[in-house]
Amino acid sequence: MRTNHDLLETFAAKHVQRSFRDRFLHEAINKRNKLQSRICHTINDVFADSYRDGACPFSPDEICIPIAGTGVDSFKEYRWSEVLKEATPGFGLLVISADGSKFYAETEHDYRCPSISYSSSK
Image (cartoon, rainbow, N blue to C red; front, side, top):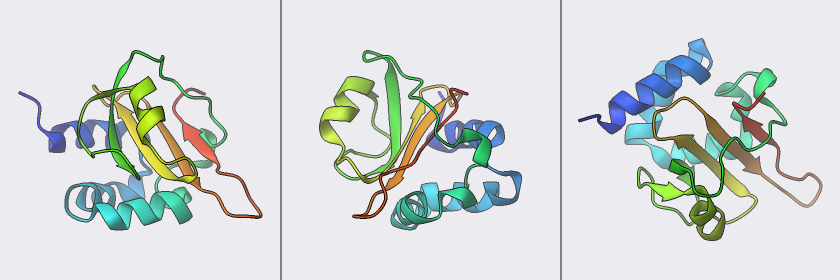
């Protein structure tokens, strides 16, 4: 059976910047509030600019797993359409596929700037 740690390691190896992988794993497992803040405000620590402005890679019925986000339970399986209903838009989000091969993330928005999306769809 695959553990959350195994899933996160697979995801990090494919998508998280090499210099940040160990920190990402630590925060995702032990300090989710810290990771949530990082996704909201300094997402470029986690993901390369090549992922910026990516489209959502998930179909509405696809199973995915939120790692960070307001309104959703971390590490619980949801359909993408359920994530959209439960998550609070504009407050940061990181959702990965059940196999760790793809992701969608959003920064926090403020009154001057909309959220910026990052995804593996490019």
